[in-house]
Length: 285
Length: 263
Image (cartoon, rainbow over all chains, first blue to last red; front, side, top):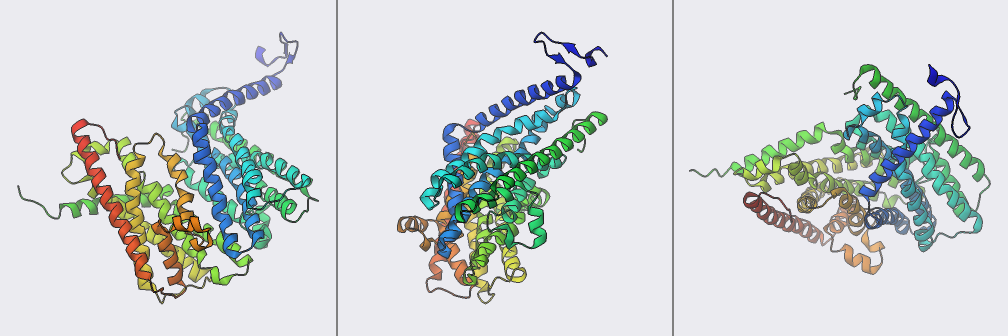
């Protein structure tokens, strides 16, 4: 077919099927990202984000940190402040699980199925809407609320925290997309899965106690979740002044997030292919 | 026309059955049941890592009370909005049975579910995880759990009538969790707080319930236990009475004007 042949474009770039597909994916990500941004603006105004979401985050951190006050152990308080703040960012990306389902609710799924382009950028792009808030919220909690509750930063630990928070959101987003893609066939359980997944991660990935508290098998499983490495690195840097493994733990978290995102993309495309083959938009309904 | 004195009870019982079936058949409505074991393990891990077995009872009371509040906030709080959005509200308002009786029946099922979740929390903590709790005070503990679930359900009805007026109830539902958990002292006794916050906490019935439940479960019956029972049952009566009054007014307006505007 003529469209499969390389051709020169007006910009002088030789267009091949490969880079045509790449630009198609980039365009789809951009357009669905704009849809996501519109979703987010509809959900929150600045006022409701601050009073509804950020204030909730502050109270959530205070609630769990109060265990430290009851135990009269400032180290426990600070550990819970760090763990919970990072967890809030990670769990906000879990809203991707609900977002992926919106294509069904909105009735736009059939259009994604009949298109010739890959459908995963539409899902991923729209779910990206949670990233700015999932980054801003923990940053404010750790750098504004944290010092009020006793967190002390030096240059190194501040830098590690500043890198850790966006990395936490990004890598957790990859993990969340994999969970979202896995449950897309089970729409009635989306909220349940999102909440249970978030609570399980909170429990075993270091938001309550260091991962070393749990049995070895659980510790092993926790290693595949990016958040585990982020919390461990930030608590080591801030509470033990140990940043020796920060670079490779961050690289590991990033790699895990990317791997989970690829798993999510694979599952989403498989779901879409099944939908196309069976010519229904809800292959498993 | 004869007056059927038992009609409100039949309506309430039918509504209770409907809600029970809805709870059992909808996985998301059973969310709190799934979250309780994870929360117990998390809180218990912190307390055990700190070597404070005397405080372990906190880990079984907190998830049970949190589930009770969340059930009222998210399940009872959504009842009126769901009735309106699905077009049931007009038919229910036109019926001879009071809408409040129907709401009370559905709320009773949710409160019953909260009691089951609390019992599960106690059983899991006490029998499986070895948290030192006693059954010596079981009758008073059971009374307090049922009273707390009932009061919270009644508060949930009031919230439902408020939420139906809002553009996006989920924003309010998300925002109303942790302030009540903190003021209600569900995790940490309010006497740990600064004085001003402790004073505010005393105004929230959950703090009375939480304090008494923690004492009862370690085998202590405080001399002023009756005060907590009075506060919790009083809250149930006031919230229930207020809910009944507000809903009957709103339904009367719906019958006349064709629009439901909640509180």
